[in-house]
Length: 109
Image 1 (cartoon, rainbow, N blue to C red):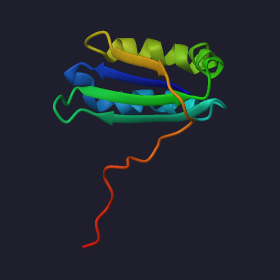
Image 2: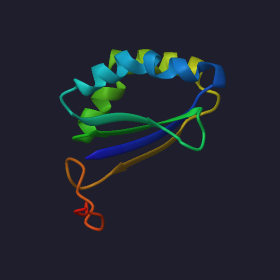
Image 3: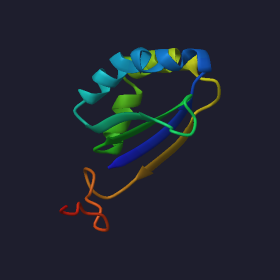
Image 4: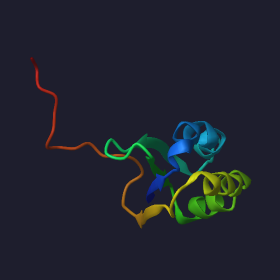
């Protein structure tokens, strides 16, 4: 799968607008046939930084995503809200979903 992690640092004044601004993009991407997951979170150290973890089933699915109209519209929207160029990791990894972490398991209390 193609695994992508992106850190978006937004203008402080736009922090509360970020998730609503990318909601349509998020929902459309999650409906793409090749999308495996598309999840937002935010940094506990920097309240102006949102982190996107996403994965696609193949290179072709990733290309289709980048060429979609909702991607192009989102790039335009996000460019208005960010305070710096996003940081990205884009790698191909084996598998097609999250794996379980062997080192940590719930304990009975």
